[in-house]
Length: 113
Length: 116
Image 1 (cartoon, rainbow over the protein chains, first blue to last red):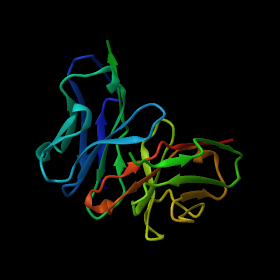
Image 2: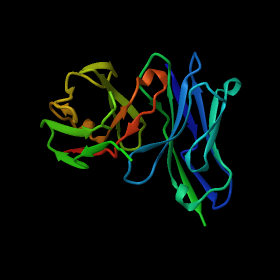
Image 3: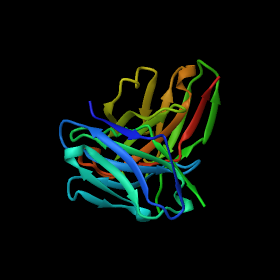
Image 4: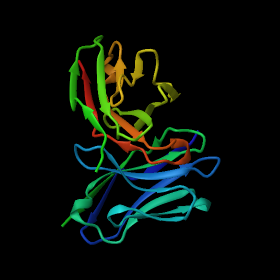
């Protein structure tokens, strides 16, 4: 069954530093991959998605992710963290032919001044 | 900007009682979903719904659960006889096109269900 693994339940960065949140997937065929963000007391908001059109995907709020088939990875990056980026980030996979999103356990991003 | 809304934001119920969680999907969306997140655990898929029938469901979605689109705007999740382990945040989502082609699912803010 398809799944995603997010390394690190918490990641701490300083404001202005690079953000790197890791996600590895397991799937027998190239899947659809998503990053969602959840701010406190809010729903899940899509940051970006990979649907096989391009391996480097740009999303909202300056985030981007690169699909690397050889490494089965879809890590999320942002060159310079803002305080407003503090939130929980979820990687999710959807295999073709299925409708359900399979989520990782989430990574809480903490940004210090 | 259109959004998915859910009511109530927090529901407290006694074990064995029936609860109905309500969602209003984005108006031109055709596919609807329920997910849940038990505290400290992953967000898990429960069910997807299209054209007035369930199109996919997980093993969690047993006979205690049902979904309905009672009118043109609401989408509900009913838990017939709640158990302690049903305590979780329940998220409704909707998408314009079939999720199987990678269509984005838009999520509501969730309903926190507490079963005592």
